[in-house]
Image (cartoon, rainbow, N blue to C red; front, side, top):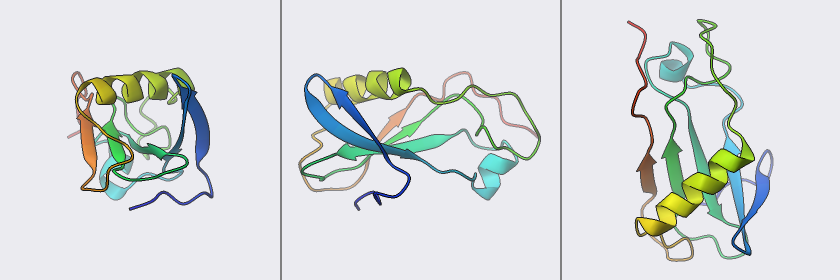
Length: 109
């Protein structure tokens, strides 16, 4: 599944262009801080498998006003590098590749 161009941002990691997107509004579970923030990444020129990254932060627009840090381009670059080391092939078609970086996230009860 390809990312829509609207709202996506371009990033270059090791000479390869990618696009990434964070939902502007949280899902219901993210809004209540039950689940951490996630974002998606794909190869810019030849999208194949989408990388889905689960962070250890609440969504910045959560409804409980729980403090969170924004997802920075440096975070996205580090996640792309880690995913590539764990076997993500961004130009190959297939199911989304999940990178779980949620260690340390504590959901609201």
